[in-house]
Image 1 (tube, rainbow, N blue to C red):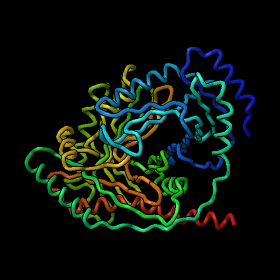
Image 2 (cartoon, rainbow, N blue to C red):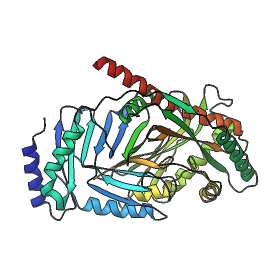
Image 3 (cartoon, rainbow, N blue to C red):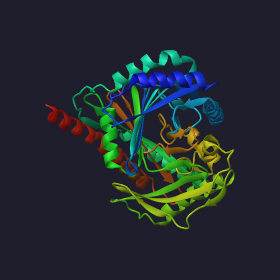
Length: 441
């Protein structure tokens, strides 16, 4: 299926002529994406409703950072990478990025990262391609490594027993969330903040190995209108289905979702009630203000639309703008993140309150994850409806926004509805794996 001699010739030509260079990439067409065995270092990104799927294996380039200057550091790393990235055809190669909510933390993932996989499978409506990448100074040794990685990844994934899951209840954690909710309302009533987003966690215990490919497949099946993401690192993986775009760039066009306000079947409040509207307006105003600092022609719809997901509905405005040529991905991310949809308003006061009240967020929950290509375009989602999978444990994350008039019990119920969205996919992945094993037998 792969002409290794042609790849070797193209790599040699690229290494000899594309000087100076930091990273070299060679892309070849494929008839389809085969079943891939996911090891310890992989990344997956899907937009099911747009027929887009990206799957990366290994790392040819990686930059990590943390602290107050983390986005500036990633901006510098991206600029250096793009200036020295040489590729053998017209298809812009892709890098991935991900970052935690706060400027510290994120374990077991790095706090903020920009990386290029050694192997990248890219599937769109009209084509499937495979891109191989290596550091320019390692070009002579790249081919055998690429072959080994490909043969390891493209071998038939080993079938494993489909585990059953049990929910680990934690009444004390629920009570602590309600207590923090009451403290949040007291801070809001005192005028110290306007909005606070509080986090809950929930744990599932599996009777066996949790298969990341099965979880991702079920997330895509349950949430086709979302960005489906996953990243494997150090024996764990982080995966989810996000309804919210933090930043999408296509040329000079900027798109950002202002997403806030939630309702579900058993909710005591309607999506269009005053609480949801006010919560949404905080986010929309903050997004517009952030974009206006760097961009022109900022446009926001007069009224939000309803985003219907499987069991949840949200209020959403898609804010657009036009960016100048000298404004890049991380310039905008640094202005936008965190929006009041995941932190609160005003942002500095909200972040200070959350830190002082130990609002802990694992991995990249309410941070961001997505891709950036060599042309400077990107698609980055807020990491929502997600979980961290370590060994036999899945730790799920959900949050709810508190504004004046919020009811802590209702916000607790909102997090339960959000947990159900990813929990259903995890449980379904076990059933799907069992069915696939029976059919194979």
